[in-house]
Length: 71
Image (cartoon, rainbow, N blue to C red):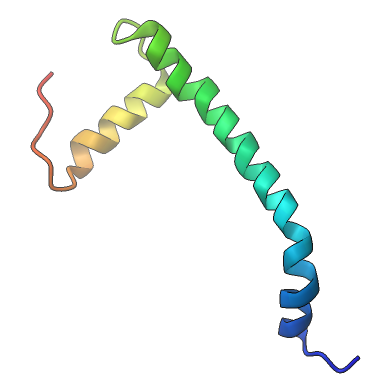
């Protein structure tokens, strides 16, 4: 009907894809809860999982303007 590719995408494809984007964000959030937050809450510092090792490496090595953490 005379619309260009970007206008078709913006008017038709993008609004129809938003529910899928929301569902994907929800699934990723649930996975993050299962792999990092729940083990950290239940195990504390006694149980070290891979996600906790990655988090400590990111915090310690990148040091985004904060003082180093004591161990």
